Length: 102
Figure (cartoon, helix red, strand yellow):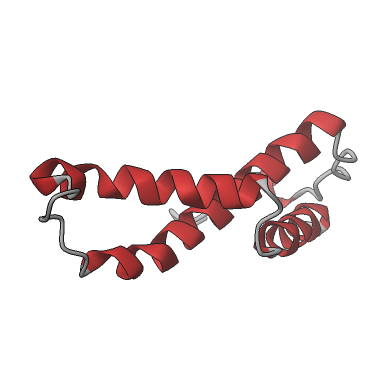
C-alpha cells in the first residue's frame, strides 16, 4: 500500500444534511445583509473621495478621517431600509449551496 492511502471512513457516503433551522436562516440572512452593506459601502466611497473639507462649515482633517465610518453607516442604514435587493439574492444562493450534497 502507498503512503497516499485513504482511511476507509472517508470513503463512506455522508449522511443527508439536516434541514436548515430558523437560527441557520437568520444567520444566513445576517451574513447576506452584511455582504450587501459592504458592497454598498465600496460603491459609495468614490462619491465622497473628491470632496473638499475646508470652508466655513467644513470639518477639516477630522471630517476626512471619519468619512469612512459615515459611508459605512449610510450603507448599513440603506440595507436596513430595504437595500438594493442584493442580500435577498445572496441569501438564496447561500441556502442553495447548503442544500447541495457534498
